[in-house]
Length: 68
View 1 (cartoon, one colour):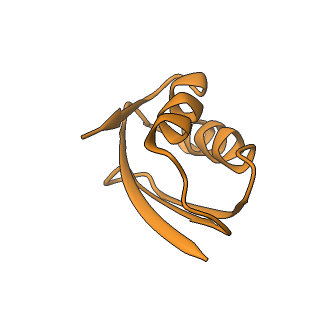
View 2 (cartoon, one colour):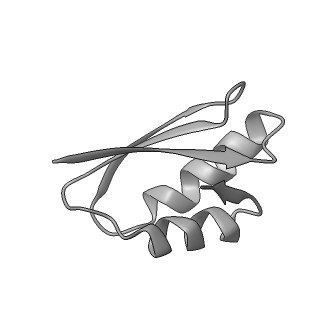
View 3 (cartoon, helix red, strand yellow):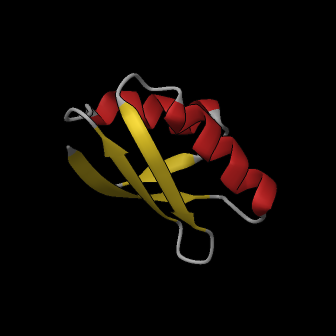
């Protein structure tokens, strides 16, 4: 199992959290997504190491941006 935390900018409400969660759970192998709206922290649990590019693409698909 792999756990990684990312920072996502642009989220302002519960709908934003839902959008990001939905896109990230669509990545093969992702088993859990936890979002802290106030800080933008997004913790992704998966059964494999995820590539930064696939996480970034999912966040972008939701309409937000992954920070550094």
